[in-house]
Length: 230
Image (cartoon, rainbow, N blue to C red; front, side, top):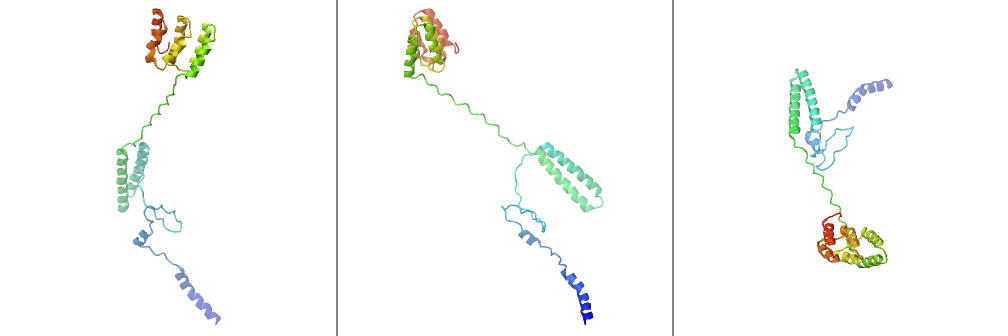
């Protein structure tokens, strides 16, 4: 009885082994098409256990180096030409290689004739903001006049004016008040050389002639007002 069971098992083993070899059934084209992701979804990651299904292609403009790309296309074309020469016996393979070379040449023509990428010129930097210049305030003007009058000598008075003129601006009417603080016309001329670069309303400069009596002083005043950097 045991011998019969062993014999039956030996006879059934090849059939079981043959049935366990399951061959994968080819998927029809419609079923493979249904496996594609819908438009707008990213391409799935490659699956080692199954076929890779690429995602939808999206045209994205890029900038490439024309000369470098043309050199790469030329090398690919040379390799295809060598492969075409070696595949003369296989007409179907030769036809595929010739089609690939034709497509490659078409790509090369598109690259060679493509217009250069448009690059926007750099925008010029905006001009720096102009500093807001204001004439000396009335209170500071009175303090300056007081400081000048408290100095006994003209050189010291001019030093006080020079220090104030290094940071302050003046109107012509304010300059007239300052000129009255100097007793001598020669000192008033020196004061005008200090005030000229700091005058804001030079169009009213004609009023300053009232502060001088002699023609020579008025001529010197004219030269001072006419120069931008006396």
